[in-house]
Length: 178
Image (cartoon, rainbow, N blue to C red; front, side, top):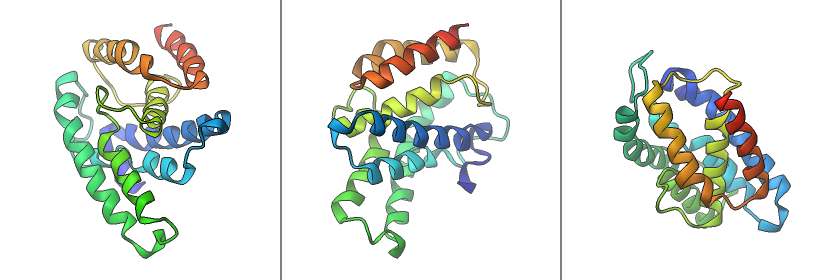
């Protein structure tokens, strides 16, 4: 996680750890989905790696800045993930698992395109962390927060497939509003 320490004002390290934790909880509460935990946890840790180095230290995140960086961060993250998974350390994964991991990182923020269960589960975990206001995260302006919340409520939340995530999101949204 060293690349994420300063990324987006320290948000990415905190966020990444939360997303990995949410993934584990979602999987634990939904064994019927028969998800590949290895793939999802690796993808959770790698999903925002592409943001590393894209922003200035202390930069306030606006909707426009984030919108511009989203496609690039997925591309860079997928490239970094592919390189990482090429290491002998990851020889316990099949080529198919590695490809799926890279794919998840490459598409995780394509909110209109994701449709497979594992893609949606990664999005659910990503959004649960994004909604959580109890941890110190990057600063976004009010207009960008409104746009983020509109996207979560109107596009992402309706795609959620697990009741666990729907229930947690409802509570986190209430706390965020308060």
